[in-house]
Length: 110
Image 1: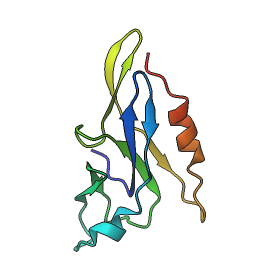
Image 2: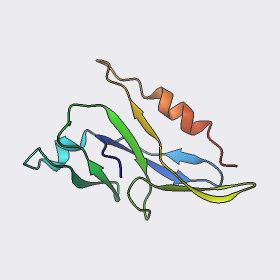
Image 3: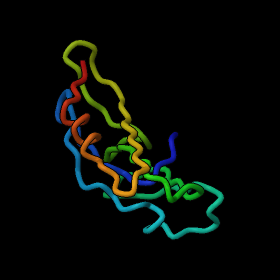
Image 4: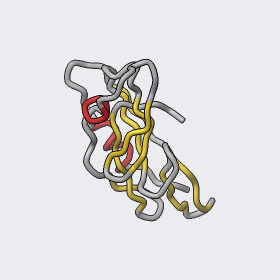
């Protein structure tokens, strides 16, 4: 399981995904101590592992309602159903998540 700071909800639409609203930094809504350990957080009914030790990072991960942590399911045309996880990190002063959105928009399971 990969610890993340932000969750981008995914919904399967056949061989691809659509995405919902990106969460705030999980540190802001978990408000848990100690900061030495990660903790399970929830955003839009999706559980994920909130990276409290490095809460200042900009690591975005994906997940889906009803799936285990870090999993989203899409069904490909040739190879059937598979589990996917997308991770994107942008440590700039003003992160640009459009690269992640574009990757998901253009993704298609085989």
